Length: 224
Picture 1: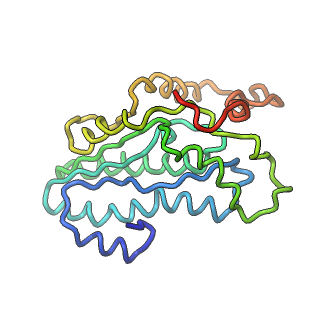
Picture 2: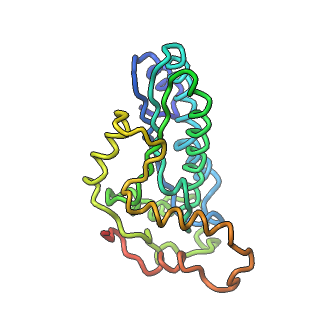
Picture 3: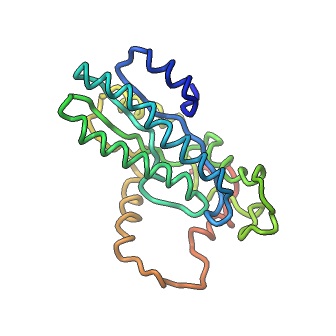
């Protein structure tokens, strides 16, 4: 199913489903000042806009039936940002807004909404993010950053660890709305979110941010 294809969406709406899992996603890596406009637009379209359009008609059926479950596969990037993953984070922040809004709107119709927020898993998805620049239609000489020197900055977990807790969310075996996997990342994410309230705009101006430096030091495929 191509969620951006209207004909595919139309076909899908004919299916009789109890649970919708919005899992379509791509990841465009690079600085927000370097990524071409068309790549930025496609990132938001695939990850946020098209899944929301797909969800609308399924949600209307669930409202009519007074039952259903909608699960958005978001990300920890929908809660906190990292350098060079801005477009992906923006798309997942949008997903978070869509999911939470639907949660409040559909409650009276007995339609459940939940999110799954995976951390970095070693599937190749994150490392490929830092190779998308190779297909940009731009002039490399105009780029602010040299992407030959950068890599995904975080250690990545074994993807087998994700399956069981994700299925529990999908099947409604857990009633939590937000589900960060693995759970051990929750304190770090909460700390990053809270830190924004104390942040100053002129903090250490002229000095490279430590999170940017991590991408210079990192190697692809780092295991947690």
